[in-house]
Image (cartoon, rainbow, N blue to C red; front, side, top):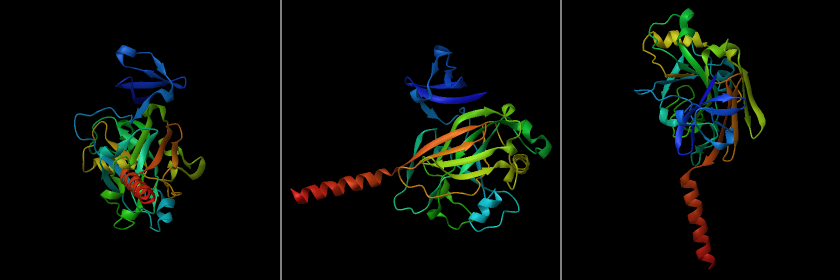
Length: 273
């Protein structure tokens, strides 16, 4: 089953995919079907009664490590993200002023289904609730170095599109054999497969749960393959994970840029008047 969270008719609704449409689960509208274009898509994550833990992997594909001129890590290289960076499918991601390298990162995102502590690798799949797609945009200009991402690179508002669906774990027989693909303005720029992860999903759950508790609703963003390119303002980026979904986002300029351009136009008009 594919689940979504959407905004429609002044409220937030839970929905499922049914015959290429969204079927609402909200009691007052239960069974009503909407087209994908009638709604605002939200991150497909149910609210949790605590701070959600979001763990993201760096250099978890050997080809991406080579792309950035690093050897693959010998143990998972992880960093924490804030949920405030999340936006939904078809959302707008702001490109900061003056940056030279803003890259998408198409990733399989694992959603924890029940509390996990000291989980053995062989049992790891029992603790997964579902999967979704994440685009973990990175502003490389802000890196302290290429090996350790910092807060400005990965935790900017609008910088992590996620969705459109949350897919039940039972509907994904082997998450380690999924194709990943990214297009920018309709052109394929990135292709890969989860089979090429340095540390597979069960290994990651075993590793993290060995020193921390993973709670229901927590996320693990599992890294991206090679093929990242700079995305200027106006780029429409679609990150797709086989069987999970295709996540679209559009790069927009910062409000500061618009304000400065408006001021310059106004100043120019005054000089010519």
